[in-house]
Length: 194
Image 1 (cartoon, rainbow, N blue to C red):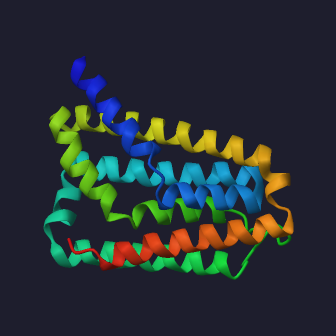
Image 2 (cartoon, rainbow, N blue to C red):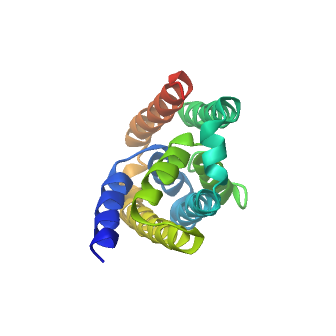
Image 3 (cartoon, rainbow, N blue to C red):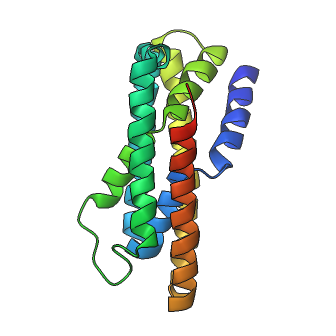
């Protein structure tokens, strides 16, 4: 039981540190409302579930061990995150234009699947706390549930403050900060070596 509590503690620290998934969830909540923010959170969580299953089955270890495959995931994820950041800086699909159906979910899913740090996290952390497919998958599901709860809390807070945050001046600042943050995450991801 103490190893599960240790896993939950480490996971909580990892989850609360903002990253591209958090920035994307905040962005989509601001400019698409609560439903789009929750859809983004569900997309991120689905990505985590995919990485959970691949790590539990040992497939994620192959991605981590294969430098070309790892680099492809890393570069693809970096390009996507930078593209989202640039779209935000341009004010693309702001509060005035309706988002396409499913776009929040898709963005959350692609953002998470394109983040090789998740692969490294799952292949290095999960085996320290469990062995075997079922035990690894169970811990991964706990991580997914914790992430969904945390991102959903962000969605609730941001959606409540949305009216004040969407004032034109404030929106420009948020667009700039969020866009630069996403571009920075993507650039850093592209510059890192496996």
